[in-house]
Image 1 (cartoon, rainbow over the protein chains, first blue to last red):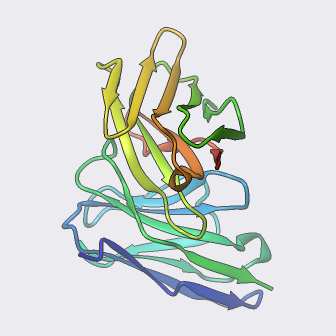
Image 2 (cartoon, one colour):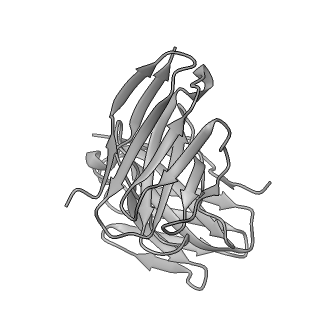
Image 3 (cartoon, rainbow over the protein chains, first blue to last red):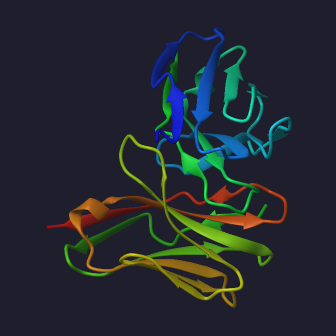
Length: 113
Length: 111
């Protein structure tokens, strides 16, 4: 049972390039989330999808877009990458509702030059 | 806005001792709290959670205490082991919002 799988694990981009981070969960969870984590800091919510067909902005949505492709998959897109988006990105899922334990993937380490 | 905070950024303990990691929250309407452990290079791992209608909850070697009067949450780890070395985050849920995470406490276990 893989849980939450994120691809790629590492990526280097140039300023202005675009990229989509992929996330898939195999736990039949309804809710999915994207976070970023900067050095020495906690997790900041970018976007989330409480259920299939819905998406909502989190704390730091600017510069990002998301797509809930189906119940399993939730992607995060950077349309025009900026150095300030250098970070570790985590995807998470939870069974039902926002007041449930979230299960995390191991992250995508993204550097933008 | 209101946020979750932590008292100590780094906690160093001896192997075999008990560890206590603290977390202060400021939103009295928060109804659900959760602790995560994050090892280097990995995603956060769920440890234990507690709802606001409880004061205490125990797991395997871990206990979470919730004091709503002073808006304080703590994680107690019994007989701390080297494998417990990690960063620990608390998070809170309020209303219809997603979880809000604190900045984390690093636990260092000395042999």
